[in-house]
Length: 355
Image (cartoon, rainbow, N blue to C red):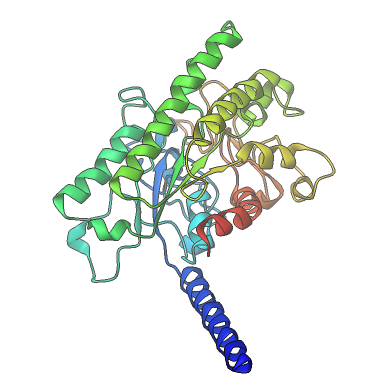
């Protein structure tokens, strides 16, 4: 009799363990729909081309896209020499590239394949309505675009099951009104306002049915070429980095109130700092860390890709090998830079999504 009890107990244990293994396999095979919201770190074409080349439409012109073998080495509206953060996140999820830009997506073009996601991000976007560039859609408006798709039935509620959104407010557009005379208390207060809006976005996405949310922290902004040019591209600007740290401290504190299974903060500050710190594995990947591959001598009004309106001569310099550079232009990493950053984040993201 005792032997029968032992055998029965062992059999039950095997069944339980098999159930756990099957459940784990089911989660590991999960295909997430991907939603991208934010600014030019993840924009793949929502900021459309203009009649004439300008700073806000430069991503549609040479030399942007010069390293992008996936798209024929041509500009695609991405702010880099190739793929950007949204593309590498998509690769982590088992896809080839970012979902399509909202601007060109249409439910009428549905070919019958399952909904895989959408990219709403626009260069120049703000967390405040009416505070972005004239051509940019604010973060709240991007969420409204998703809400309207759901209301109109273009995207079904069930399509947001097993969905993950990335909120990428990363290029500090909202902080460009800050000046060197602002006191730390004023900066901290403004950082609280900006991060409140990011947290509001997370809450709205959850209410719409998005199951997982990733949130970008700010990279160390004082290390971007836009700031480090003041130090001849030799070192970071302390003031710019202090502002990023204030933002990230406030964001981390507020996101800590969410369930760890639902929201993950992507610590870009630490990873970027590892690139800029001599002797780290990441820093050794990039011989040139502060100088942009595509540089302009006019740091106030110039930009990568700018040409003389009369003669068409280049008003910028271009490196021969973007893979040696972490930064592509004044604000955005190279394709190689993004690859390194997202490789460092791959483990935490896969653990968070259980894939």
